[in-house]
Amino acid sequence: MVNAIGQASRTLPDLKVVELGAVETAAGRYPFFHLTLKGARTGNPKPRPVYIGGGIHGDEPGGVWAVLEFLRRYKTLPDRYQHFDYTILPCTNPFGYEHNTRLNADGIDLNRQFRSPSPPIEVQWVKKAAGDRSFQLAMEFHEDVDTEGFYLYELTQKNEPSWGREMIARIGEKYPINRNEEIEGMPAEEGLIHRQPGDIDFRKIMEQRADWPQAFYHYANGSQRCYTTETPVHLTREERAEIHLTALDAALRKLWES
Image (tube, rainbow, N blue to C red; front, side, top):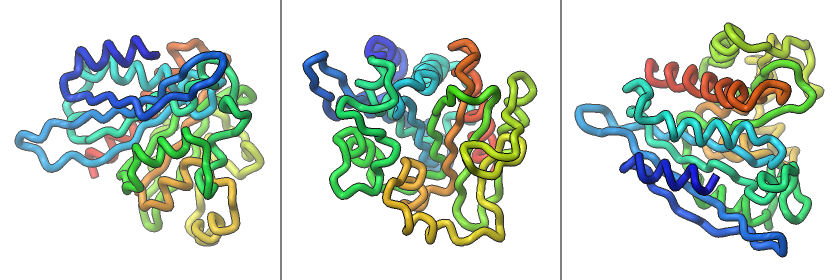
């Protein structure tokens, strides 16, 4: 990962790489990187803010691979990608990623710590990088060892239209979709887990939970659309990264058109 980020910084002049710190253990040192990639401004409206993150669960490497592949491809991507300013955290659990474990070095699930008054240092770094900003799109790449097909969580601010079905349709053209009516204990529609218009105000649900995942944090800060993509791990490394990037492309296309 470190070498891939270094290569990206040499080929993308607008990419800024900052090491916010490192997880220090007896097993080694695991740096935490915060990347920013600025969209072109000449002749365009001010680029809109987008967040991309991977690897908060270390045993879900497909998200990290997808972020690194995004950076590798960036110069060849369609011009619409230049309409956005990206905040990128390629691996928010570097110890877990290197040791293929869901938890961090202290045995903590980082994706349940975003409301903690004293969160682990990795969560503090996420918050420092995000800066409590409202992103127009926040994408987090995950994987699920138990699923046979792709699915995603969609969390949007009130009155924002759903894009999830179109994202899943794009992926379903080539890859399997989890079409179970219930996924991870929640109602699902053809691979989409989201709030219904008549559901209770989501902020009331958030108030009742102490173990916020990262998507709740972005939503609480006003991010318009928060997506957590879940790929099946039985596919190849390349396929899993491609699924995440297809979901990202579908969401960015909708944002660009809006």
